[in-house]
Image (cartoon, rainbow, N blue to C red):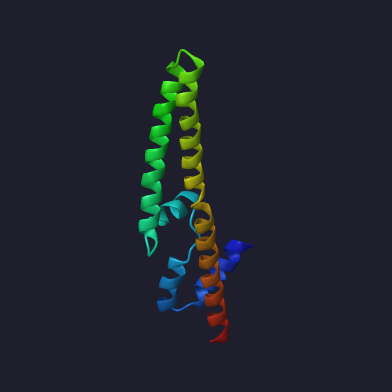
Amino acid sequence: MTDRLDDLIRDALEAEEQDILKDTEELGYFALGLSQFRGKLGWVTWVVMIVQGAMFLGGVWCAIGFFAATDALTALHWGLPAAVLILAATTLKLSLMPQMQADRILRELKRVELMLVSRRL
């Protein structure tokens, strides 16, 4: 049903609007994730990913120290920062999901606007 609707929209639009339609095509999960690195807020995504990567690597380094510990106090000294850093890195990574969803909704809204414009003509 959706493919048929997309074909009808494509046929109804002029050449100029065809370019807009291509810009609003639905992206896959990975393409949508990679699109977060472009645009007005792309720099924020770069900063979040760099900080997230550093926190994850720090967490892995602390986890190695945790597993190499021989007594409980040393294990606590390495294990607590490892858990905090890895959880914080995961939280930072997941903080990008609402922006991805907002981009999907805006893209669909542009498609609806195109459909309304093509019906008015």
